[in-house]
Image 1: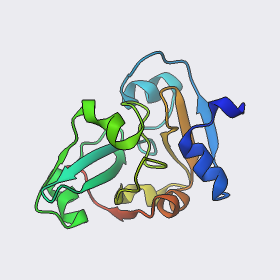
Image 2: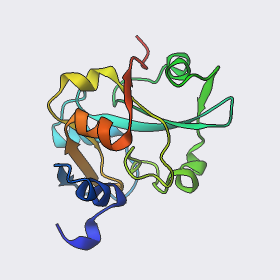
Image 3: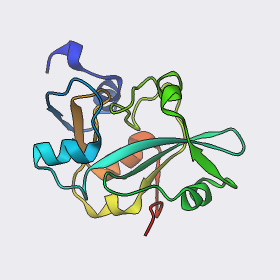
Image 4: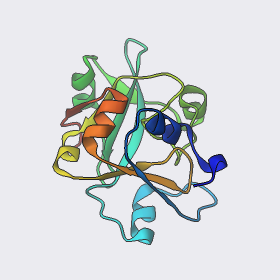
Length: 159
């Protein structure tokens, strides 16, 4: 892969010697992850989206959930020890994380925020997350994702 195509997330994985593969696809602007998975023939279950939330305390948190699922804000708050959390407004994502909507990944944000990954990830050999820009995906083991993000697993989706 050409050096200029490496995202911060990829550089961090390289630095930690974590094995991963990259999938690049054509995409000019934001489209939701389900549409991307459909276009690329990828399973929804092992494809994850990254959501950023703010708690009542003012702390920020990262939640990684299957693309076809919805974050349960009450369960998410419990998982991080907050009374409540709400999703960060789209216009604030770049300033907070360094990534744009549709390219946001839990790896290599401007600051290391507490990260919670939906517990279903543990059931897969490989998960798919954003590669750090629109049109890029990273495939890696859920254990490596937990390690590099210092994340934890929890049940954080609506049932």
